[in-house]
Length: 277
Image (cartoon, rainbow, N blue to C red; front, side, top):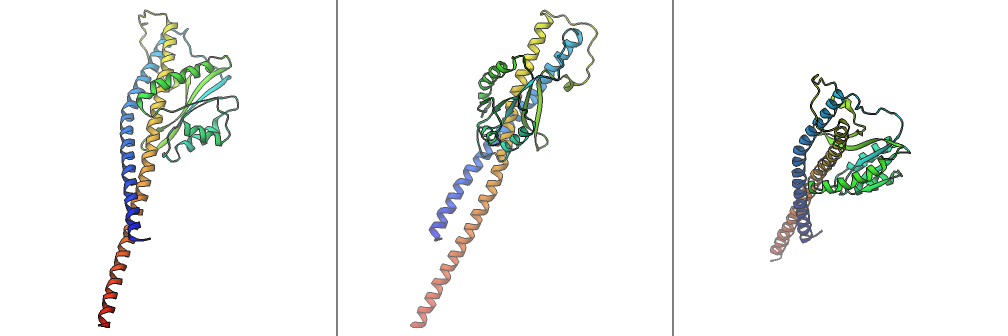
């Protein structure tokens, strides 16, 4: 490879390195934004659960139905975009182990859909994933309409989500029941013996709280998906950055060697010419 070829290749790698660094910075920005959102949404979600627990404690007629039978709606969150390493593969592996033949499987994310299809799993419905916070609301409302069209059928009872979360700088895939609400999540809570004054029927409040749990839980899953996807992507970009740096270093070493060889050749040519004189 000639000197000019080496220079061109080094320039190409440097341009790619700039793109990779820009992608790392953007992924890092998304991670920082999601960390703030996730904490706030989790707190709100916990408060809704406390409100539901308080309603049940004061109005025992309001109970969460207990049933072990019935089909399940399974919503799995992945990504549309690539360059995020084993993110979708790991999720697809978990789904392969937990999905049942009679589950209604909803896949979120084009890349995850392709990965799940490679494992020959039957997909009930598919939606693209959210790539920004601004797109979550519209996508989620469309998803909820599709989900409830299936879940409202008499033979379905359980609605479960599968998503990736980041805990102590480590990715973990979580399977979480959304409906019926799992009240064990908040543990035992003591409520005042004085019944609260309410202006709506307990049944109406109960229904609205369950709807809010569904809404905020799915919203949190979308945020967790954006966060975890970018967590994987930034690590993938870090690995790519290291490889590019190594390639540039190797090319620069080859360039220096060629220059040294060229200088040596020119010196020998000069020395050879002086002997002839």
